[in-house]
Image (cartoon, rainbow, N blue to C red; front, side, top):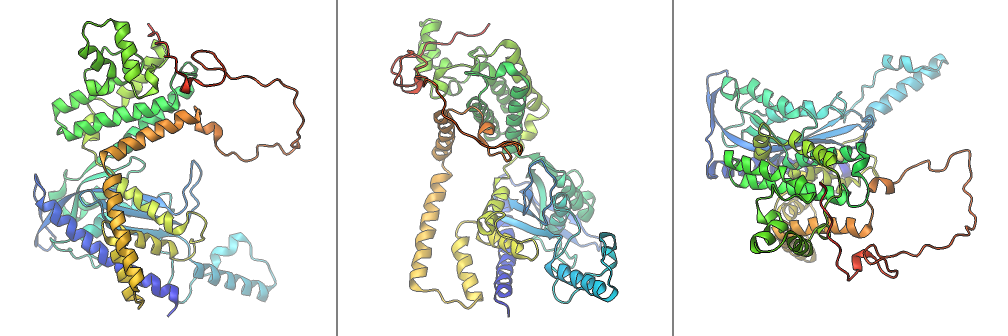
Length: 521
């Protein structure tokens, strides 16, 4: 047997076994969780009664080749469903529109025709030739990868309930997606919910629900902030709506949503969340009249601790204690501030905040595609013509989850007849221990806060307001010109500090206190 075929077959065997394990573990943990709403009772067309686990899941789709604002011309796509309880994959399916054997068979028939007739085959005549061939065909779909996510979502909903023969999987393994967390890129969740209703019937009507992913929701708000800034020149410039400031908006809005979720997402929590969100833009503009939580506002904390202090004394002390933006406020007018406030209110309001706070996190689904890139090396390997990318996607599923990396290594070694050495076993045990330590450390709240601070600090130290200006661009030199160089007779400009106006250092290292910025009226 071909070695590559043997390896891919072993990966597929472990993949199928891992999917069954993940589904069984997911159902067990979901049913034993506190506050579980109970199984979904329904009857199939044969009158048999079933009790299916109602679950919270996340889902996402991606292509082997990612496109940015251009036509998607890749050949492969994949769709994954993850458990929101265990964060392990419950379903994976790949879609492929190309096959190397089909291409070879088609080319042979075209060359034989040209040799026999002496005439060149035109592109319009290609459809007249067959691409049939012996052996396995790697092409399993005629759907473009750009729209494959929508169609694969229905396949996922069906596979979670029924096997390949169309029979119910049993109460132990069958999964009904009660709540689906996904981004708003496509209507795939709606298609999955509808497919469940088609299978189960009236018992599933109105049960399935799509909640937007919280991270993507805030990211969409970020994109609106960037777009609004580009459309309003008054927001640009120093101490205005900079990239670092928008990152602070992101942090503040996300914290308010998470707090609402943790407090039960009831009416009181939602009202508190909206109040905090609507205070974000005024807070960054130096207006603390809407601030009501000391943990979110240093100014309010200082003022409550020192009620006898003057306004100037409170602002000076708050600026010294602040860890962000050196205590500086945005220097924008009331009109620009109103535009930013409207951006927040248009996305986060009484109609939407409940669904947003109820939404989960689809990072586990998106992380799977990052793992696939680790194996496929992005677009450096040509995997379009065979099932190599599919095998790498299945391997990514096998190793996802605590302890599964070591377990997969041992299972594949046994299937391939490879004996593990003592040194290899010791290395696996050492790596498993390190992975567990890293998992606990990186998932902690302190690590998350540190990553946010690091991101803000990097942008501050680099001193670049827009990363788009520094991005790589092709064809910078016009074809009609030649790159020339000459000595420029210019006097070097002496850089001075922005605070004390003295040379030799910058404002970031100046020992003089920065003057308090006046609030705009």
